[in-house]
Amino acid sequence: MDQSLFRLVDQEQDSFQRKWTLVNGPVIIGAGPSGLATAACLREQGVPFVVLERAECIASLWQKRTYDRLKLHLPKQFCQLPKLPFPEDFPEYPTRKQFIEYLESYAKYFDINPKFNECVQSARYDETSGFWRVKTIVTSGSNKIEFEYICRWLVVATGENAERVVPDIQGLAEFGGEVIHACEYKSGEKFRGQKVLVVGCGNSGMEVSLDLCNYNASPSMVVRSSVHVLPREVYGKSTFELVVLMMKWLPLWLVDKLMLVLAWLVLGNVEKYGLKRPSMGPLELKNTKGKTPVLDIGALKKIKSGDINVVPAIKRFSYRQVELVNGEKLDIDSVVLATGYRSNVPSWLQEGEFFGENGYPKAPFPHGWKGNDGLYAVGFTRRGLSGTSSDAMRIAQDIGKLWKDETKQHKKITIACHRQRISQF
Image (tube, rainbow, N blue to C red; front, side):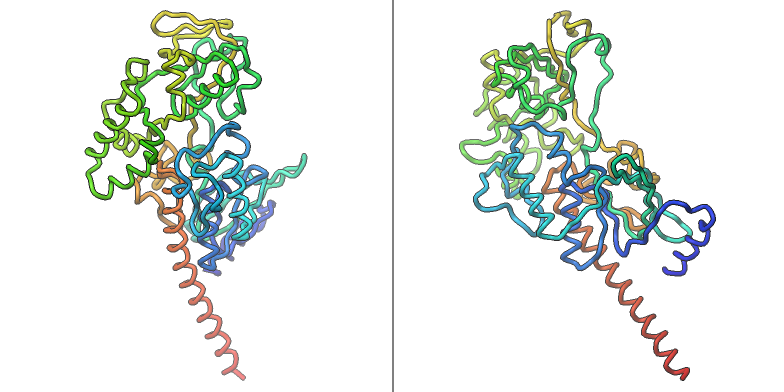
């Protein structure tokens, strides 16, 4: 391994101007929950690592791109990272602030110190040397320095929500009012008294619409396609917990049918309010398409009362107005695009076998955590933080075994060389 590294350095000695370093262990790209979980599991295995993060803090999505009222949608026992549970005094559904506190204490507990402000430009596997080469730009004030990390293993932990999705809607540039993505939305305070169009009806769209109502704004929510709305709890029991319990004994199709019956009993018929259910069940849809059902925390009550106006798809925008596909025109003051996020892996990872064009591993869960040549992925399961945890533990165990085997081999070579030198005297 060492000889191949020297060949790599020799090849580039004349043209290699940027700073570089050899990492004795994996490079983890991303310091969100996925990267932190993997780093913690590696720490437990005794494997050294480097974590690279483009922002100046851990969990930048949670710290910079979430709204104030956000809480975890699932009970805390399904959202904790490996090896360290949430504090006992945290509520069943921790707030955004509490979750950030937990992640910061998690990083401190496992002595995880990411290299911040390092934006990965490219990562590719060097066939000649057998190493991954990760090129970054380090931002320090107004200075930008190019850096290269050379490593045996690469863990992609940038996740499903690395970049916001902004749809190209006719006339949006001529709208004239404020247009923001949900990642920029903090609270409804500055929208008081306004007519706000919320584009999207997932968990973010529903929760932003509810928050706007609480600040006396008038939201209209665009529901372009079908959506599953489930109660967050069924008679005091977490819906997700019930699903986990039922899945131990029943087939998925039956669990789907039971969930829809329970949803109808608790929420009533939501289709008459413009929320058409998909033909595929909520769990099957999640597993095959990655589309998460909405867990209702109060928006449906506002929809039923008319405080949230459900509208069909957009045809075009004009100045301070939107025209819908049914011909209706609405006067609006602001637009919030709750249109989701996407993976950014294809923009920097130079590899075409393990990851698909959509930035997700091609292999379905639970096989999408390991690729070839020391490449791994964590946080792409479409199964939230519980999926992240299972991937992180698998990756750490796999790298841990390889690292220990290579370390033993290196020690044997060193001892053999040492004995050879002694015998020469």
